[in-house]
Length: 425
Image 1 (cartoon, helix red, strand yellow):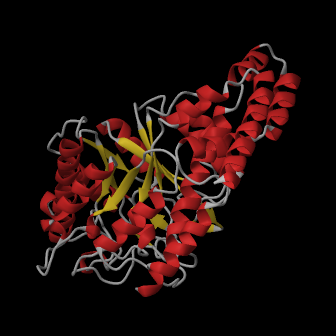
Image 2: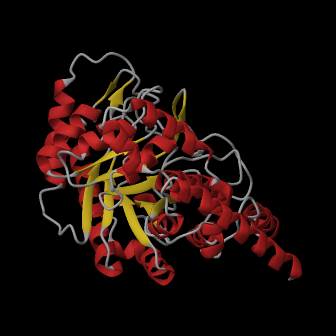
């Protein structure tokens, strides 16, 4: 107890000194910590079991998705996955959300195909979120299914297969609305499909015409935005769709703007040297809200665990400096089975929050004043000066206030959980 008190005292002293340093630049650390506590991150359920899900109809993982590794202890049941998530949430500061895929429903012994999913299959998830004070987001699962084996779903040539996926996406929107009704906060239902071709297509127009018709059918029935927000997600390429993706960035940008849907920007869905930070202020000129899937591509869309790198800092800065946090729904999207899966959640989420904190500790008004005056010397000097602000002490204080471990001390709890729980699976 004495050691803990000394540690807390040391941390408080470190924070006080850090706050004084920031104040020299006109930065209010208390305001920054308060604002950070209001920004939720939507953790992705699929990190906990390698995009496996719990249905009976799912085939091998496909649709350009690949999970690397076979770390022991992955969740095998919904209860195990929820327990793992609870451990992760307990080590992440703040109150957050969960992003749930349709293949994670609870179907019992009954075979329920994708076009038959309903709110009842997610009742336990909704009740769990309600009990834990979490928001929920949702996704149709348009991959790992016999009707997706050709590489096409909503843009398929066969009208019956297109109808199957249309019905699945309609059911998913209904589930999103049920989630929003029950939890009293909107559910973002995000639609991504793997449709594309490995080699150069002869017809680029036909699949996009069919996709437009299918999407219009999916979204035909209006749902209150107070319950459900529809989002569409583009991609540059994937495994098996290297040469042509039907739902490209340009396609979905046009669709989202013309149909008043959210556009999802995924950090791993563009050219490896192309960041999405600059896209944020552009698309928000023309649409009220967007969804982010924060990931880390390495050479290709490999969905690595999010690290505190320049791309992440740039994304966070655009959100905070422009007061976009009420217009942007931040979610994570990666799957790494080469390390402890719970640690992967925690590392990625804490890094997203840390990046937001870095942005909150920026003297944005001073930077913009210098820029408006044409004083680019001061702008650059100040941008570089604030890079050495004492982030660690301020982050640790935020963790202490949120009653989660500061620094890297959370890792021991994960190791203990691995020994006591994961190793027995």
